[in-house]
Image (cartoon, rainbow, N blue to C red; front, side, top):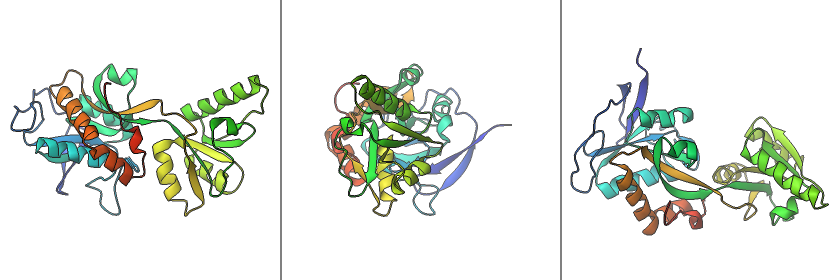
Amino acid sequence: MKKLGLVAMGSGMALLIAGCGGGSAGSAASGAAPAGLIRGGEVRFCTDPEYPPMEYFKGADTTDPTGFDSDGARALADLWKVKVSWQVTAFDGLMPALQAQRCDVLWSALYVSPERTAVADAAPFLRTGPGLIVRTGDSRIKSADDLSGKTVAVQGGGANEKTLHQLSAGFTAAGKAPITVQAYPKTAETVAAVTNGKADALIETDVATVDMVAKSSGALVSAPGIFSAETTFGVFTRKGSPLSKPVAAAVATLAANGTLGALAAKYGLDPARIHRGGA
């Protein structure tokens, strides 16, 4: 039985298509559009619209995602003067969907990593890293050194917990008070820990902290500049695809002309973290 994937057109129309896109070389170049699109005159993006403010469905609309990534994808399509369509896919199915040619481009808040660049080409667009959230009015934490002796909540099992333990070990080695790391199964529990005073702060990916603060009804704020941005989000195409160089060029253009910076400001991200220059 073939797996069905949802493709949502930019106009709001939705339809179901079956299985893989096959091994077609794609469309020929036409006007501003490069060669290699699955369908001429249209660029299809893989997305998992469940990660605000990067990509998400707003209100009752479940066909036309919004957010930094989604608006960036639309801007890329505008450069090429083509229509936009969406291949809505669960997070763990994003790269497989790209490889199966269910979409032309994967733009959905995926980190650039050696594992991913082994199977796909990547155009970096935004530097990211851990972010810290504290209670509104709490100004005690101005740098990573100020976490010494503090209690920090974190969703357990990920890179952020590892970051806290490494930092805490450094404090201990320097004769300073360690961090008390409170690991929770769910992000919502870390928010509750800080809101209720059980923890001094919580650590989460910086782009996710924007939405968490926005939904706190003023109870929480981000503490800026605590951690460096050592990871990069990328726009992915199939390895060796004729679209790889045009996508990289388009992303670079959107960074250089201020489009991505404006979108970052619109969605509460730091425009200074827009990637410019080489990979």
